[in-house]
Image 1: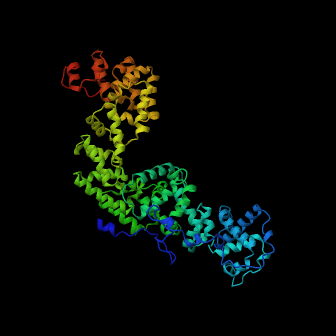
Image 2: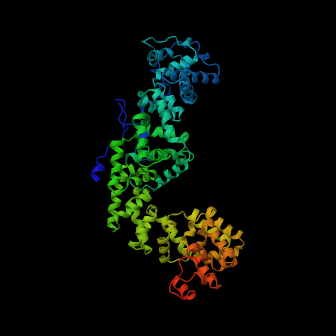
Image 3: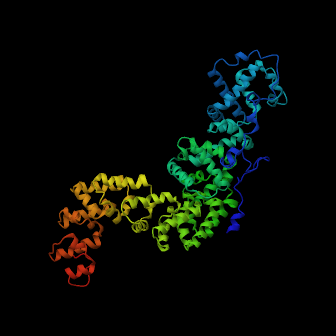
Length: 609
């Protein structure tokens, strides 16, 4: 398995590239992680500003007579410059509508050209420009030398033609890419042609941002993936993290990853080779491939945005071999799709190699590899966790007295615990210790409800305690309530706790009654109102003719099956004209109930007619 992964090729776009372009020789700022690879700016940005736009600056004895009349007003200049950019775009193959839309959204590009025109006007250097950069704009070698007679728009147009970016720079700016980045990217993708690139940009935006339904989920998962990764990043992960860090630097951070207007420019800056991926030969087959593995089409954008190198990967040479690695590890195809949706980084070679390290670690700990497979399918983020962090958590388990046998259900039911930092885990332990629980009891709570130890201290645990105290539950009673039903700390206040409390109050119980019921039987607050509380309470009041106070004295009544226990026993007692408390009726097991009320060793399994 190790040899197979070692021979996997690096991610690369499956489309032809310009002869001078190598896949991993992208502009430094868009390819490598800024914390580990620092590069100087290209030489052009070290030159004086006036030397960037044209050829050598030579002295001229004659300034153009129209230098002062090149523009009548800033607003007029801006409109004329935008019109010139639109003309350049049409000349490069854009439709009139696309040209107008792109030009309107590329003001920095138009300003750059206009500034170049004004600079040459002011210095009277058009003759020098015409013999240098301007010599490239003529047709058949003929150059318009008498620039003084030309209008401002024409000068901007000729200035734009001299750049020979074929309209790609304004196109990139129009989708939000910074002008400086657009000028670096353009030479690598311009060969595809402006019309093709316009259509490709539209296709990519439709593929990745057609729906905002899952934008919040994408943002949360990106944050989780960033913070929980604790292994060295390979090239693909490194470029993804660099992309995420660019997003983090702006308002909203990676939470805005699913919003195209915000994240698409950063995506193109980080992965400019996306613009060379053919729609028909690569992008559409990639969508079909992901759908084959069970990823719903509306969710495909989640996978691609969370791991953009997938878009650049060749299906046959990159993606399929890596999926095969997971199949060899015993992960079924249906689960591979689910894992991809939750954690697209499973297609990273670094993550695949870490899975092997975790497997060896589990074997040393005498934990079955099957346990790791179950845990990875449930919470694939653990595959990006270092064995060092996992070991620190397992040592804390051991300190709480949890045996190796009990570790297995804890890991399989809440694998995310392996991702916890030791200090985060200890905070939960101290939370229970401060309530009076000893280590053994804390360990039992962990085994019963491990999810508690993966929850947030402030927003989950303390918030539930404060809510119960505000309702009037005595702090002295809290340890008993939590010991009997620790899951109460995981119940949602607005959707679970409050509705159940309000229902009990609405049927006629007082707050004191409800507090008493919670103290006696805290699982009460976890039962459904419609399917448990309401039908059992109606049967109690209407059929059994019991007072409402009966459930205050014995709230465990709600825990018994209405059809299999409450009704059969009531009908037995009714047939014998026996009136007894709910405790006498339900607390006894079947044998004791039958012996006392039927005089036999068995209990009627069906209601009496």
